[in-house]
Picture 1 (cartoon, rainbow, N blue to C red):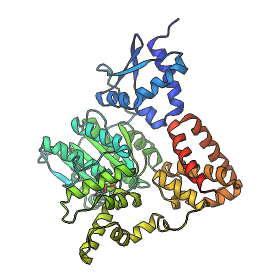
Picture 2 (cartoon, protein in one colour; picture 1 turned 120 degrees about the vertical axis):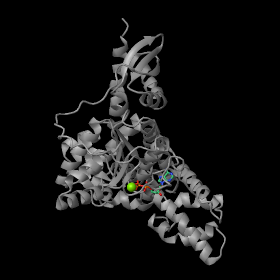
Picture 3 (cartoon, rainbow, N blue to C red; picture 1 turned 180 degrees about the vertical axis):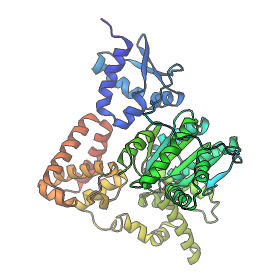
Picture 4 (cartoon, helix red, strand yellow; picture 1 turned 30 degrees about the horizontal axis):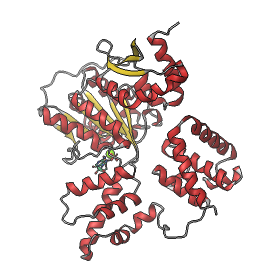
Length: 463
Ligand code: ADP
Ligand code: MG
């Protein structure tokens, strides 16, 4: 008895749901629907072009690899755009505020709030693994504002390019339609303007300004935490724009559901469109960013490749830090009238290098808790200090668990000792971490490869 397309697809999805990050599953796979099976190919509908392309390039191979086990035979997966069924989350109950009295339309192209930075364009944005989803989503939004992903919510640690990307969308749209009314505002500025307008009795003007924009960019919405009046106002602004089909882009240092004290109705609205994260760039990506930076600035002093590589290897915390390192290195070189060499970079960037935990790279390396923490931190693009800290962000949790696992495995420390090497965590946390790593080693081949490599390299230090 053969399975229907829907049955085949849900078997694959049920399995994928167990393995993929929840956000990925919800964003990309949940809104799909099996259309037909044609020979050994299943055709699956995605709600729009972007989702179809993304699924095709990121998920079809993976899903196909599940087929032999879940279905008993291999299958190819092809994604199509479903023209009929443009899925869009339902609005939850709310009553839109009465429209403001009609006002003369603001002149087009008006950029309210802070000016856009001319440098923050797509052309100047280097795409790599860590930001490809956010970049692709931003491109898609720029191509069809208000149509595909509304809002676009970009989150990630500071200095990784959120503001750059959101402004790139504005540049792109303005370049095509210069009459577009763009509003770019930081959350704190939004709050301040709102408070001032209440004081001056000019709230209608304030509202009009934001509610009449075609494209609203609100930077750093994590600052909405605990600001109830601002949240209320923002909620209505959001609704007014959304209902009118205007594009909204938001940035934050964490996903909507993790912003403490953010009202549930805002959390849910922020998740309506696309939530995309930006992570730390890996080494290759850092090199590409530095090369791009060198090209852009028409630097009089050229930076030799080995110096670029040196900076990329040692400055890992953010793109902003990378840029800062170049600026500082060049200033130092011109002050001292010296050539740009690795030696000079080491001197000029001494403080930054030490901050990144690399000051001791000339010391003989032996296997110790600190060495393991450093090696793991470097592999995952975080700091050893972060691993020992109390912070429980996703970026730190996984490498921390890996470091615990490797310490246990390579050094055989007691659970309590391991806990205390990570900021005094208790032994049950350590057990949980070790179990988590063991499970992932089985279920995630890429993760397993990373951990095995670390294990091998560190293992050599044992002799
Ligand atoms: P965030 O808003 O996430 O704190 P920004 O957008 O302000 O970060 O970026 C910090 C700096 O790094 C900016 O100068 C920006 O141009 C640069 N930058 C960030 N990511 C990239 C990238 N992928 N390519 C080129 N420059 C980048
Ligand atoms: Mg920013």
